[in-house]
Image (cartoon, rainbow, N blue to C red; front, side, top):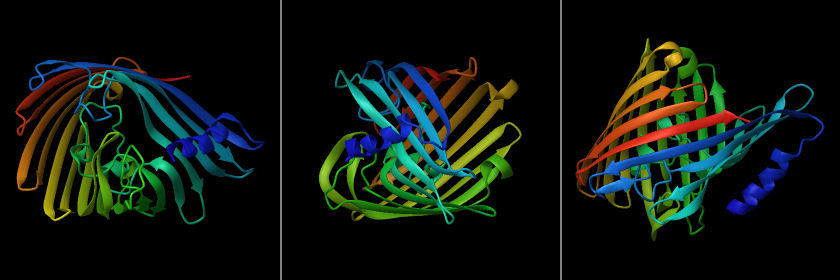
Amino acid sequence: MKNIVLTLLLPFLLFSPVHAGSSLFFGEIQAVAGYSSMDDKVIYRSGHAQDPMQKNSVGFDLIKKFSSQTRDILTAALQLRVAYDDNEEKAQLQVYNAYLKAKTFFADIYIGHSRTAFGLESYWDTHGELIQPLQMYGFGYDRDWGIVFSKDTANGNVQFALTSGTGMTLRFKDNWLITSRISKGVLSYDNYTLGLSVMAGNVLETMGYSIMSEEISELGFASADFAYNHNNFEHKAQINAGKITDDAAFAGLYRISLNFLEENKLKLEGQYVYTRREDSDNHYIDAQISYKINSDITARLAYGWQREMNDSKIVAQFYYYFLI
């Protein structure tokens, strides 16, 4: 199915019809290395060995708009990387965005691999960062395969999605996922946004491109998220509460960011995450410093600790994202 979607997308991306609009083509290169006290060795990733983020990789991000004589009617997007998996010692193809977005009179419609309609991850793009929101802790999906409806309102947004519930990979085994989010405030204009989300479905438990269990899990979550920018401070918070199969599950996140220098070239960030599932709880503390060397290159250094495995990690990254 993934190959079918990409095959359908590529002709739109590579060949322009009569009324083709603008296009953007970016390259992406990242170098990642660090040390984990649990593994007691040098690592070439920022997260768990089976997580897709972040690894030494090279890729591209291609966005193309198609227009009528009066307006944009369709956007095609394809973003992928070839990453080195130091755990399996092999290259891995990672697909992030692979969708068509149609602009209609009632909503924007996304078909393919795109964001879900749930929590901070519905609009917060962290795919290049070392520290991640709740979906990377097993509570939500950064991307999923399916269809998403998004409608901007006078003071916010309404979203609804029907997706596979398998995240980065795609499997069909009676699995499905419904997500929906309603929000007030647009962060880029109002300096705040408040969102309420729900999630329900039968899903396969995945980590990156790995299926952790072939058993279908029933899940249901409600979530509240909040983001607020004031002066050079940024605040983000999210709470998820619900059930996975028959077990109560809860997760909470708070991140604070502080920007310095012209154009926010220097950023200091701290994040705390708490998770509870199957009568087991865990605490995560992360800190990150980012510096924009220029408009294309960002250097990051992050420290992370988790209580359950008593693992401390320090990871450095050079991230190069450039217009071709």
